[in-house]
Image (cartoon, rainbow, N blue to C red; front, side, top):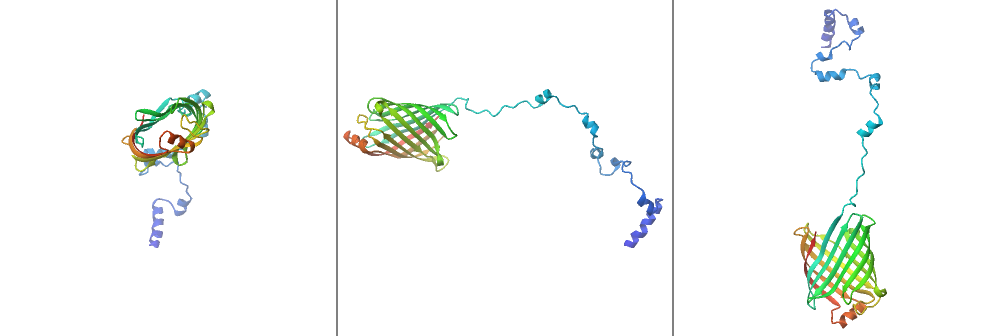
Length: 292
C-alpha cells in the first residue's frame, strides 16, 4: 500500500505543473486565503480571524473624568442597623390557674419591651390572687442596654404592692441567653429601709415536636435581712420550680399544663407557718401563654 501512494504522489504533482521540490520550497500565502469560502466556517466565525486592534487605536479611547467616575460609581451607604426602628413585644409568659393547698389561685407573669435593637424599655410584672384576694403583686420598669448580641444590662425601679404595705426598690441586673439557650435573669434590688434582695430566674424550651414544648423553669429569691411584715427571711427565702408542657396552636397562642413546687426556707418558712401557710407547696397548674 505504501508503494502505491509513493508512485501516485509524483503523478499528482506533475499534473499540477509542480515538481515535488517546488511544492516543498514554495511558501503558502495565508493572507491571500479567503477563509469565508472554507466549508463549515460561518460569517460570524470569520470575524475571529481579523487582526486585533492596534495599540494606536486603544490609545485613542478617551480617559474618563473624575465627574464621570463619580456618576458611574456613586458612593454606596453602609448597611443600616435596625436600632433606629421602634418595635415592641408583649409576652404573657404565664396566665394560669393553680390548684394549691389553701385553695385555688390565679397567677401571672408578664414581660414586655419597646425600643430598638440596642436600647429598650422593659416592663415586668408577676403576682398571684387567691380566694379573690391579691397575695402578691409587683411591677418593674427597667431601661435595658445591649452589651452583646445575647445580653442586656438593665436598671430601673420595682414597685411591690403586696405582700404587706407597698415598697419601692432600685434595680440593676443582667438578662439574656446563657449557654444552651437558657433564658436567664439576675437582678439585684435595694429597697427602703436598707433592705436588699437578689432574684435569679432561668427557663429553657425543650422542643419535643415543632409545636409541643416542655419548659422547665426556676426562680430563687434572696433577702439581706428579715422582714416579718412581708414574710421575708434573710438569706435564701423562697424558691419556685416549675415544669410546663405547652402546645402551640399558633406561635402566639399556646395552652399548657404543668406542675410547680414552691418552698420557703429559714425565717421565711417560720413566718409562713405562723400565718398558717404551707412552707412546702406543690401545685398543679393549667394556663395559657400569649404574645403579640
